Amino acid sequence: MKTYSLLDLFKLIISKWWICFVAALFFAIAGFGIAKITESKTFQASTTLTISHNYSKLDQSDEKENTSSAYDLTQSDI
Image (cartoon, rainbow, N blue to C red):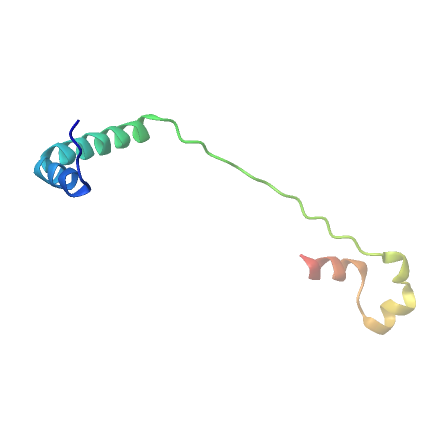
């Protein structure tokens, strides 16, 4: 039984560099082709924002002092 050292295996791989190059090129082209053929997914998201104020605390005396109404408060939020 013959034993191989790590250096022997490294020399063998270096001597057959063109096989490694051709294999890498083949798999790169195959991977690119598969990526182009497969369907990409498109995602969509939506959200709703609700702003709520307690207008019962906004009585007429507050409106006179602050000169702001419920409409003004709502427009400032937008």
